[in-house]
Figure 1: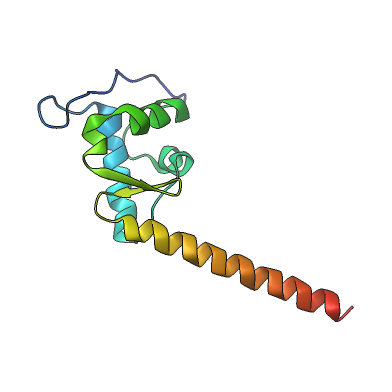
Figure 2: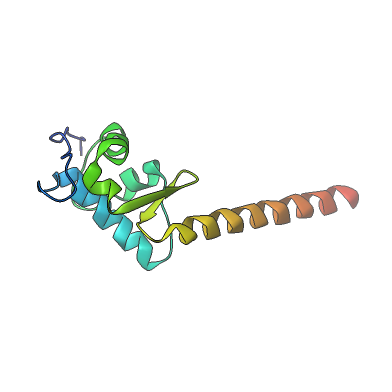
Length: 113
């Protein structure tokens, strides 16, 4: 299915209704939040609920939408529902721990050779 362009994003968090892309982004982040899992812009695009669009449109909405800014937070390149910034920090810490574990396993393997 081909991606299509969406209307420009709204700029007021309280007055105007959100654009379809903004609603889809928030729905996608809310679903990921059930699992305490923040998403990168690429992941948001990949898992976008109900509104196919381009990666560029997702990045533009995340960067310029006041409506989303009132509802979404960004931590270390990950996006999550507002007031859930600790989720991004936990995912980053877990990623660093797993990377350290993998590096230790490789070092152990190389020592045994």
